[in-house]
Image (cartoon, rainbow, N blue to C red; front, side, top):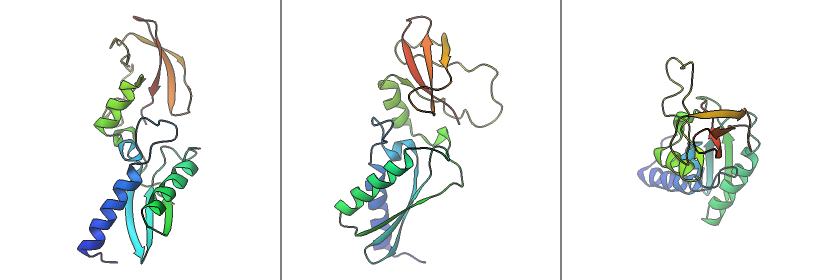
Length: 167
């Protein structure tokens, strides 16, 4: 289906609205900053489809994300909203924007390293403490408040913190 320039601008506006929804598990960042809103397409008069890629297939937050996207688009005059899960290409922590990484760090969560999913994986991962900046950190638990985060502690300042795992 070919879109007109007006539909293209509307799709872009609706994508911005869908992307402005806060992540339910990481409310300091939006779905756009997390990189999970992949596309928005006008499918008919008053009808739109949003493409959403979960951070991982079993992510329990997808249902909440879907409902929140539907609510925001309904509130902005779109009567029929369909949210479709798109699994290819798979989401990667490289999809998190620089602003999303900054907000994670400002909230005390060590963001994933950019580009960590491309090329060889280093034998040791230096995770920087979001409190003092030291890379002398230790893993306390492979899982934290959500499955996509690990619990670490800084050896230098002794503060615990979440680390958003690279995928």
